Length: 206
Ligand SMILES: [Zn+2]
Image 1: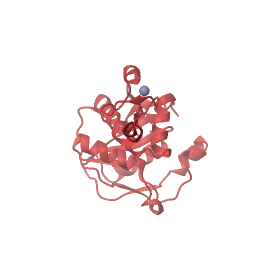
Image 2: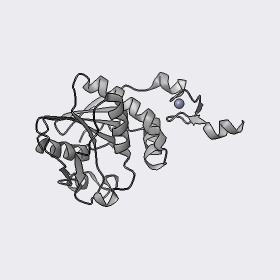
Image 3: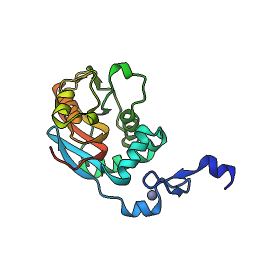
């Protein structure tokens, strides 16, 4: 292997196999990727690009916790395709994302980067429409009942959204409580339509 291969090696985000620099996913994975699916969250449609398991789960966790921010390009590509297949035909005034607590303002927000990439691909402006006003515990460390109350009233809208249609972006949804609370907040600010899209979504219904 020469130095260029070492420096510029690209790997499949799903199975870690080395791929050509012109590819974003290996051929094997491309041929067996599952179809996006629909969930109903907060009384509206949520498009999930992939289930929250196996290689899909590994890919989003590598992005979220493994520092592989460059994966946003390929992950957002699948999120756009899921949006098109599940929510297609609707137009949006804004794209926004699930915010982090203010104290973490300068910390990297994984959902924000995905939202920005999706915004570029769909040519819809990305805006910070939500802020997190309460410091909450990490959802994945709580039980189901705690998760629901943990995010209750944790967000507020940054502007009047009367008559606006919004696409809300998050990286992962499991119970849907966080998205649901964000959707409630956006609708409370006047949004006429809010749809959401995630890279991974649990198929479980609660
Ligand atoms: Zn692969």
